Length: 114
Length: 114
Image (cartoon, rainbow over all chains, first blue to last red):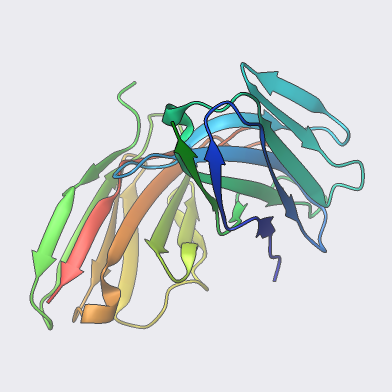
């Protein structure tokens, strides 16, 4: 079945540094979503991408939907301590129609040193 | 809307007991998902429903797991009998149909089987 390879698995960075993470797949996706999960909470949507090549920003976050439809990246600029958490990519597989399922990457655990 | 509501938030049970997890999706959403999250496997899709009908239950680990959606506003995930390896955080999520909508997650149920 479809799989998403998310990297890196974890990152330890200094406050103020930029962060980059990505997801790749051998399958084509219609939609790419990026979620953040705080400890003890469910994942919360950060950015949604619906079109190949689309580049979208949300504050210090920027994400892109790869032109091949098989990858996406998320950048966080000037990290702050509250950026700590687990970041997940998720994709909706392309079957030529409306499909409900979302496939999730295994997550990138971000730690920020003040 | 209050978002996706899950209960209980925490459940501790003895091996062999039946466990029932509950979910109320966002009103109007016609897709409902059950996920399990562990350190080893990340977020795994167990089953999802569309208009109260199970569409894909291939992620349900064993016959001990069952899920129902008797109406558009309620779903249950049952484990009978429970085992220590079922210990995990179980998330419910919901979304609208269509290619351009994202899934919203509940806060999860942390299950511990001793």
